[in-house]
Image 1 (cartoon, rainbow, N blue to C red):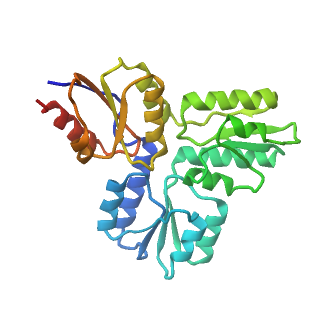
Image 2: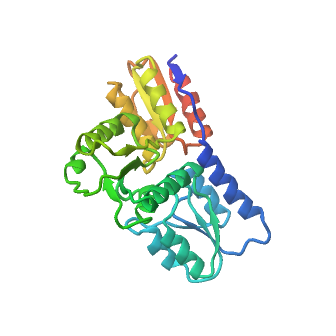
Image 3: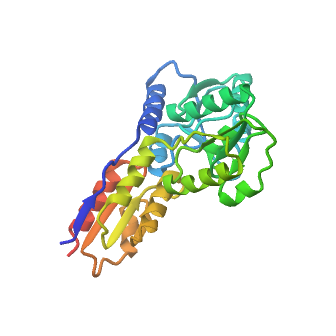
Length: 289
């Protein structure tokens, strides 16, 4: 029998739980103006989104289109839900001008990032934001102000040209705690007086540290949606430790994987991965003969 180590924590993080709770409350409220539109995926997990679609939620998510552009797809009155990733002030204003009822399911921790950036802009600071280009959380932050400088890697720091002694640096909440330190150091080398404010959320930090602190197994499985940033970073961290690692969405993805010569398996999951998906995978592996 293969030994399986379920790396804790598992299940939804607080921000995901909050977003799902909000949407379920909207669905249960008889006074909710229909139809209900979801601007982008509430969270990055297709299984969760499919369940909401079955309940009548209209998900507006087209690759390459911004949240602002997605609003143009709404042609009737109704209710629009902002996802856990947050939106820019212009998205909020446009939705309001369209006469839509607005329900904001933004993760509270993402709201903290937005508010800190706004506060520092008011104080005269230039903003450097470390994030993934095209990620909805990043999109929402960049929409706060046209002059926010996006950095995706250490190489981007070289091209920065900020003529301001006041610089505030923060980041997307789902990045790798190991990569981001190098970027922070690169920024400090160029701008020694910059204010560094690491905003990787606790759920992301704890899961990544748990990966690094585990005993090395024959195989590490990361469970989550391929569009989930924090899930992809878990795989990256595991590979960084030198562990044989794969990332899958569900038990169906195990059909093409060989467990020959595999005696120990560890399993971690992204913060938007339902627990039942992980449990199904564990049961499958334990029954391999």
